[in-house]
Image 1 (spheres, rainbow, N blue to C red):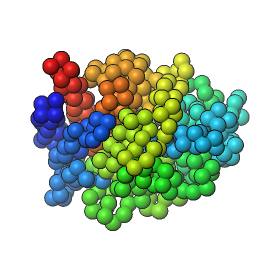
Image 2: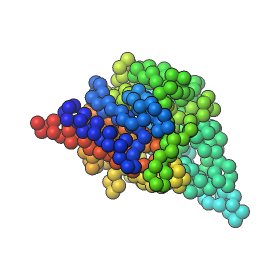
Image 3: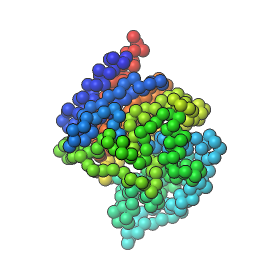
Length: 397
């Protein structure tokens, strides 16, 4: 399989950096339960600089941070220190201050009321607490524009103190839920989230190049973020998340290499075991990979701030649920990904999947805004499809 797939994957990567429109640079990898079976890089780290994209390039991984925060939550559940169904305010009292917004009055002031029930950590883990983001929700965007609600990219506590769009538990809505999970982890552990990650997740997995704060060595290998313009061209951006952030944002704050993330994916393929130690118990992994969203389903994302997000949806027309803390495709995906697999994405067009059934996972990383970039997303879909076609041929052969 490796020779056939490697050639197909190399062609896909080369194609996306030379096509029109193109991506500036891309890193893509696939792992089995033991090691990476494909590692590829193409294009440039920044279009206005000479450095080639390399497999050890450092990316802002945005919402692919969420699953790592989820693992930290699950460790606390295992240790008996966190009840997923207890009120989250037990651990992070400020979340108990959030009220439901029912619109705006004649003077443009928010109309707020108390929620009918408490937010639980499980609701946060499955994005049903009532929280959103200003770039995908009109109400939050209005609060940002008219009321000065800070953006989550400020990495501030104030950015989390947003109203709820509905009573907790009623439906799926993507938002700052995992940032609050990070606050819960910090409150219970008595340490910053990055320190929890380093000692309890990264060291057992052999992860060395992932952090909430860029080191000089990481910055030298940093891939630049690019804006996709209306004509399809790309403009390099001088965008970085805050150095020394007030809050380690469990929803989006990490920088890291794709090789590091593959070690995290392998942990999920290996029932919680890492290269240098166990991160989660096997029974925790089996519990976490199930649907915890009940009868609610994942819905499409609407781009409200169009510089940051396009309208986007994985596998339109297919049912999707939520695990702790990943999207689940309930049906076999058009790429060949089997029903029940896990996956998600990051704002700058980073995408991954975890197929525990077959024992493989993959990651596709670019640094382009807005989210849902057609060139990058189609490249990713082609990459995943090529993998499953090669797997099918190997099984048949």
